[in-house]
Image (cartoon, rainbow, N blue to C red; front, side, top):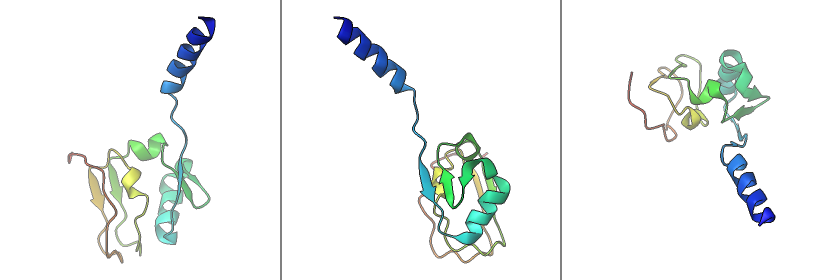
Length: 101
């Protein structure tokens, strides 16, 4: 009985733990923008996809920055506005399903 209780308590505690997940940002220009604008979410060329600075950001304005790959933008869960004009993008990754503000 005691082992069962301990297991239940442990599972309840782990339920709210969100593992830190990093994704490599391959585009050097997008990486530089992230490191300049959201440094708390970056470690080298990797972005912490669980960072509140990423998951709660609603606007990303990266026009005229010579970006060709937006890998990582899909982790901006609250993204409502993406301004990315005058870059070298041929495709966009899956974007978050949010409503415009």
